[in-house]
Length: 254
Image (cartoon, rainbow, N blue to C red; front, side, top):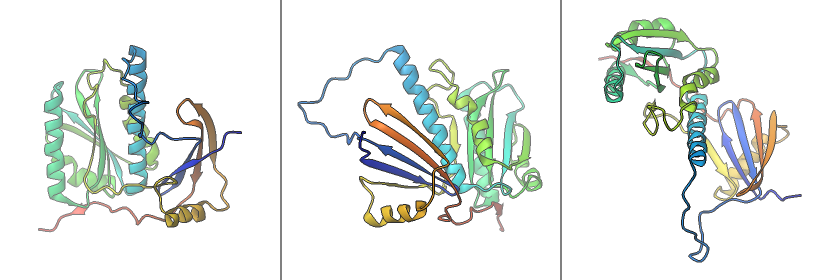
């Protein structure tokens, strides 16, 4: 059987993702082994782009798990009154909104995505750490001065992120947002903890082993990769208790 030689751990608030590799690419190749890059086919370019989009969704899922708590955040949709179909105009309007948001609220955190409606206009979705919908209606909605604001409570953070990124992962290279920034995150978000066997310290790896000791994965799968050999994926669902409670936005006192 292939020997698993390398392990990577992503440690979040509510779960741990472990990936084992038979081999990894360190990025170090001698001059003799370097080969000139070959042109990718259209299908390979599509596949590579879709992979990058899925990686963006995974990044947002991890940030959301660490930085937000169900029951202490809201789902916000910002719609333009006019039929705004210009990317720069839409982004400018959103940035002005977040500037007002930071001026009015302390400890504000958000994850936002940009989508195109059926009528062709842009709109924004946000996961925002407002304490409840009434707080959002009173203090967040008036800051969007371009149209309609819808605010809903959040009971499942993962479902919200999957919903607001559905357009992101559905994009092709012919999409109007191809290679354009289509998600935005606030400053100060707590990054997730990542530990691996090729760069991690002995103390870090021991801490991970203690965290997973006696636990069986809730999900497990494996694939065979041309570059990495056998790759195993294991997900453990439990509260890791390694992060402080995420902050909730509150009004600034002037």
